[in-house]
Length: 473
Image (cartoon, rainbow, N blue to C red):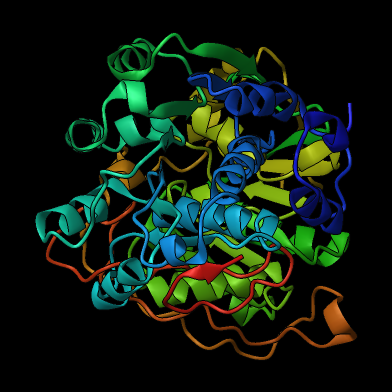
């Protein structure tokens, strides 16, 4: 099947072709016709399957068809017609980027809305008129409470990564938002989740009407195109092993996962010191620092991005070659989400996990989940000791509890060191990583903060400019 077989408008097909795609993924093959037919949808798909385009493409088609009969006057200062709810600011940016990319040849407007920045630019953008609103629940309710947003015109509702929203405690906010929308008979509802847990099914029953059910690539499966390997090493030698891998494998774009924000900062500083330009990405970074780090990583200005699980949810990079689990996650399903950042859309990728003695139970849990024994390796010169040092006490809840904490230390400027990567042939000594700052672990549940930047994000390949305002397609 080709995209041209799905009945999409020429303007949308042109945008798809400009991104280099011709064939829809399995989730897109099933979701696009269902959405175009006006069906409610309950779709189970893990990250990296193309699920975002699976709903943005048909939504753009439906809006452009309805808009064709409107006069230009009616298009001014219109209320939002599509509401897409996302659990984190990074995912909201990613989804709005998809809307903007595939709708660039259509006269539609979109914006993203999340906590952590001022509300006034958002309010101005809403007054100018928006067709598609991508929002995090907390900031959306802030606007509702201040009467700066009218949801009475919503025709399509999308809950993206619904399982993550429930994990982050947004269920009450979601129910409040559902109560403010037009009744079900006047609204199409789409739910996307990595699992069909009992909680998700209960939520779905509360607002989906006779939904079509789609299930692609279950959450407990890993992408076949990703090569997975475990390197056994003592905890105190992990940094040395990581540097050894950089030096001997010629890595030039690596996403590295740690369990904690402090660990991400410390590892990023060490990489900078060794001449590997890097940045840390976690909830305590300011919004500007997070956007800057993602943009520079996408553009190849950073060799390594050191991230925590929740902060990495919005990372969407075509053909990201390497993912390193510097520390295994406490939740086995997060391993699948982590390595799903590589091997996307059929591309090959490699995931390497550095596993110390204390993490062997985590490793067994992961292997049980994915029903696969991972390849094990010990690097010469880095053999684990027979009597490893016990792990220091730590908060095993780590990232899921990490909202509203004191900011981490500022990223230090790198010192001259070894050169890694091949972007432009330059010596990648030094580094930035952005400043610290108060932040939240997800969207930003603190209602005392500012508003969200609207319409942020760049083009998929370039990172683009991040500015306030609506997007004109």
